[in-house]
Image 1 (cartoon, rainbow, N blue to C red):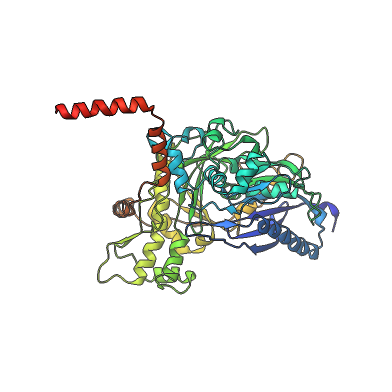
Image 2: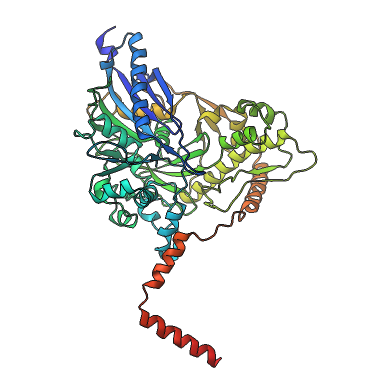
Amino acid sequence: MASLERSKLIGVIDAGTNSVRFVIFKLPEFEEIASHQIRITQIVPRDGWTEHNPVEVLEAVRLCAVEACHQVEKLGFLVKDIAAIGITNQRETTVVWDKNTGEPLYNAIVWNDIRTDKTVDRVLARLPEQNHNHFRALSGLPISPYFSALKLNWLKDNVVAVRKACRERRCYAGTIDTWLVWNLTGGPQGGAFVTDVTNASRTLLMNIETLHWDPLLTKTFSVHPDMLPEIRSSSEIYGKVKDSSVLDGIPISAILGNQQASLVGQRCLKEGQAKNTYRKGCFLLYNTGTRCVQSTHGLVTTVAYQMGRNAPPIYALEGSVAVAGVAMNWLRDNLKIIKDIKDSEEIAGSVSSTGDVYFVPAFTGLYAPYWRKDARGIFCGLTSFTTKHHFVRAALEAVCFQTRDIIEAMKKDCGINLNKLHTDGIMASNSLLMQLQADLSGIPVLRTEVHEPAALGTAMAAAQANGVDLYKLEAEIRGYAGVQSHHETFLPTTTEEERNARYTKWKMAVQRSLGWAVSKKSEAMTDERYSLLASIPAGLFLATTFLMLVHSQRR
């Protein structure tokens, strides 16, 4: 095999929520020729808390790389044939470590961890009208436990080692991509302390327009800028691996948050194109091009990608569905309605409809576009004829209705009708779900045949980076370097009247799910109000109290 042919390989580190993978693609077809995957331990100290051991994640990356490289060697390639490496990662998950020793100061707090509810209250108490959207124009995001700024604030307030390291200016903080790049490129011995615009846009600390850390945001969340990495584009050489591992000497030339990477892998590179990933939850991204669209209908504004230092940033609107595959797990584990999630398609398909049953799976509230923490799950429309088959079909339809909610919000924000929806993720293998999505949204659904579009999108970004120059990423070309991409298409089979009538009932069911969880005002909020009261001068307080007493006696 000629060395010129062998040299066109790209490696991808895929650091997800549940596992880490190392994948190797062969160019120009971007054919996946090797991969290895390791599950990551889910640490759950309390209900609603989720952590990862950052060292375990790093070691898993190295082990996966060794195994994948061993596989390509069996195919006649050499490790040195890997021209570059890209990284795609779970977003928002936050790591803090000692920049002098490289030791983590605490476990990584995972993106879906909700421990920062009280931190949110404390921040809101200092803002006019306690408005969750106060910083949306700056950051594109609402104030939510979801994003990294709140996690960093919690770490500083609750972990002594973090607070001490911050005071001594030796604390580094970042998302998973930053932790991996810093360690792989040398760690304390000159490792590159960087992140990319897609990950930075999910922290609630970056100005969505300037693509720099915003002074007002960092001050509000008590994060010193020295703690934060340099923000770079999604496709450029950040440094070479320098850790004496099997990857030593290979440049790292792409970083993309996993959902943005999936958008690229699905080739949704034109304004108006969208993809939805169906996993435990759903993540729908809508490409808005170079327009930074501020949502007024409950969506978040995020950076989709920036393919080079001098390239313009491309933006997206994003809507997240909290419960998709999780609902199937619930039907299996809690209700024992199904034995295997794979059976859901057959069980739901055994009935022609839900029997007018609607399921709102708001187990921990509703995400976009509602953002209602007080919502709770309900079934509506039950009759004596309702069976488990109707329950399962209603659970699948709930995923589709929630996706339509996001599509409708995107239409209102952008004024553009979506003409097709690209789909991926483990739940997308359910053909009935894909058909229901087409029927209930009224648009064609295109299911990709690519196993992991996030890894593919990252490989494309790494290959096209300046200095690697093995690929040219162009929005006009649907195929990959001359190889046509393939999709299975599901066309709507319902009339507009039918789907709108069903959607109206879904909205009725959503309304019935609201207001079930009545939360008390947190201690943080109460303490903040007490502090404000305590700041009033004593003389003014006494004088005001005396006047109120006189006024009441006159009445």
